[in-house]
Amino acid sequence: MKIVSTEPSQVLAGRIADALNISVVDVKFSRFPDGELYLCANGLEEDMIIVGSVVDNDSLVQLVLLIDACEGSNNRLVIPYMGYARQDKRFKTGEPVSARAISRMLSWGIGRCITVNIHDKRVLSYFKIPASDVSLSRDIGTHIKDMDLSDPLILAPDEGAAAFAREVAAIGTWECDHLEKTRISGDEVRMAPRTLSAENRPVVIVDDIISTGSTIATAAAMLRDHGAGEVFAACVHGVLTGGAYARLKAAGIKEVVCSDTIERGCSRYSAANRISEALSQ
Ligand code: R5P
Image (cartoon, rainbow, N blue to C red; front, side, top):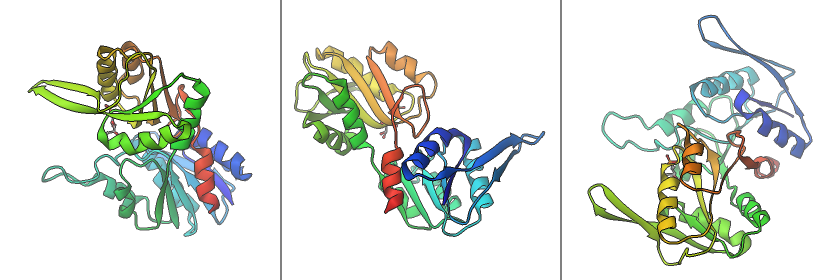
């Protein structure tokens, strides 16, 4: 068994290979003059582990091409970050269920699929093959432990992230809460911790995804109004689009960290251990 990856997931794939003590396949990636993607993998085997985050349309096409190159029904697919997963239902008539379309597309030529903190686990049922999800809550919790903060409050920016925040908080038996949005007027929203006080204590806001950074930047501003101490942000998937990292720093966030499901300069913990555990089962 060997591991092969798309370009955006090569570092994570290397870490998974090290954890499983297997080798990595060398792939040549290029483009035809008309812009079409081309790849050629050197030394594929019968049973492959294929790793590829869907971070944009090119990475999706690379993944589809790689699956076809591998040609084996026992191949296992790891999708560390699955773009399009947030469009997991039809919000208005005429829209696609994009998560379903992508899941179906990636199910051919694969025996099993593993995702990491997928936006909603219901998306797993869209795959045509057995699919399971692993969580990095333990890894984020361990990172927060290493930060050595005094009595931190672990905070989810909304109710949807509350269960994930509780899993993270359990690692250090820290207190945990989520922000509650109250609509003051048509264009004014107030966010405050639901039950616990953030006053004069470090706060770590945790979420599955930081995309534009607006959710966390708004939360940080509200926390400042509530007299919070230093504010940190930790997520699984650092999408960080449109200058999000700078937006968060400008909002006064002391440190922004993410995992390597999307490889970033601020990737501070790896999904490799959880993925290799799942692959070993
Ligand atoms: C929403 O359901 C997600 O959990 C994140 O809170 C959201 O995707 C973050 O987006 P942004 O960084 O653009 O506010």
